[in-house]
Length: 289
Image (cartoon, rainbow, N blue to C red):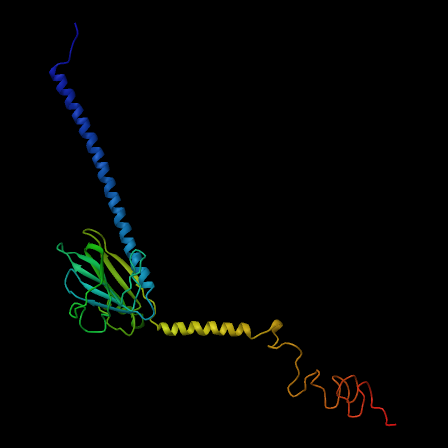
């Protein structure tokens, strides 16, 4: 007589299978979530490194006549600031494509979550030649790019090495409005998200110089090199080559003989055409017959 499964056994088997499948799904879901979290963290790290590299490349490439201006627009958290660069026609290009602009500005815009967005703006007009801001003068940016979103802290400080004092290391200025010169470098403090640690980065700023002066120096150097190369002949002889005579001494040759003499002999002698009057061209003058 064949023996079948009881209802209890079937229910028990189904329950065990459900527990096993639930465990498998939970493990798989946890692995997927962990992988997604790791990918997100890697993407965030890549984005942050790209942001810092973007800033460093363009600070290092500031033109000689670029002007830097930093002002604080909020004294309470979240701290807001505006860093403006003028006379930087193709600096701060995005995606390798330079945008021609008279001025660029990195500003912080508050968010509803008590953070800030980091925005890069491009202007087609100078904006540092007046005490009024671009908005007050009706100047709108020609383009704007959000570099970072909802950052917890984004704070600039500047240091001028010419007035640096080790006892005043923490007393860095939060504003820099001296358009006639530049600071030595700027420090950026960033906290990207809640629970993240504070990150500091230093950006050195090239020395300010007039591009016309630099170009003139390059041209003078090239001109000196050309003149130095053309000044000496083969073997270092002066231009013109050949045998040279001392100052005041007639040169040897057809036109350089002494008066009444040949090209290289005594007066009246040799085969020259400069013999004394009455003499032949081949020797001493014959006595008159």
